[in-house]
Structures are given as C-alpha cells and as structure tokens.
Length: 72
Image (tube, rainbow, N blue to C red):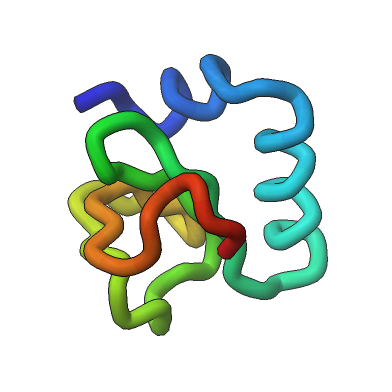
C-alpha cells in the first residue's frame, strides 16, 4: 500500500480539495480508492472505515461500507 503522502499526490484535484476542506474545517471526509480502500481526514469515528495507516488526522485503509461509486 502506498503511503498517505504518495496517495494524496496521486489524487485528482477535486478529490484533494474535498479532503483539504474537511481538514481545514475539522470534520470527516474521505475519498474512495481502488480495491475498496480509502484515504481520509478525521475519520476515526466513521464505523465502516478500517484505518490501516495513520499520520496525525490523516488515515488510509479499507472501506467496509458503501460502494466507492456512491457519494460519502
């Protein structure tokens, strides 16, 4: 699995902006990645997200909830 920084660097602009908005306003936001994974910010309380790696308020892991093509 890529690091959080590498994953952030690979995101599309609108996905990165979504995460930065959550970071700046201190609420949970995440973006679905391939193979049911996610990258997010402030997601510790989101029940269906299993955090695999964490750096500060940033997390990467497995999405056990909604399909990634649904809005979060």
